[in-house]
Amino acid sequence: MSESSLRLVWIYPDLLSTYGDQGNALVVERRARQRGLDVTRLDVRSDQPLPTSGDIYLIGGGEDRPQRLAAERLRRDGGLSRAVADGAAVFAVCAGYQILGHEFVNDLGEREAGLGVLDVVSTRSGDQRCVGDLLADIDGTLGLPPLTGFENHQGITRLGAGAKPFARVRFGHGNGSGDGTEGAYSGNVFGTYMHGPVLARNPLIADLLLKLALEVDTLPPTDDRWYEALREERIAAATQSA
Ligand code: GLN
Image (cartoon, rainbow, N blue to C red; front, side):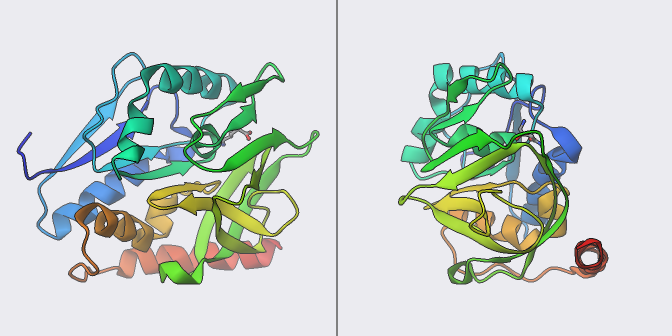
């Protein structure tokens, strides 16, 4: 790995990668290379130590049991919390989002500790799952177009004072807590319920992660026609199924 290389870490592909969430790593990697950046992608399995020197960490969603195993291993490892303290950018989806919070309800129906790097707490809705296409407006200070994604979760998430809502829902459920929010962020740490893969549907979020990691305000433009066509199709689906 070269010293100047941007280090992208995909956390626990063996446990957390539902609905093609691994596509998020592909999108960040590709958009970095399109800008001529040297990028090293590390796929770190759950039996391996997590490097603390990453610039961007990505975590996907997962079924309830793998989610518990992932949380146990990440707590024991401690590397992600250290990387966050060092300012790394983190983008987590669904089960990964819940793991970043203080706690969630695991597959045994018990409260399980998360990493506490995002001020959120997740519980479970009764039997109802939040499923379908979502459309939401991302926090205006982030300067991003509307969020499109697919959600499938039973967990519901409440934000504490230390986390800001990532987006406000127009169609769909999002955090599911009844306050109309979707996802959460604080500093360089982001959580969302959105699959899709969400960064393929929202490539400017991938660019935001690159900008945070590189500490730059802008990146060279890319040809985003393919992404735009996908966005248009999925935004129409969210609007029509409402
Ligand atoms: N097991 C979690 C839930 O149902 C996360 C699901 C997911 O990652 N899609 O809330």
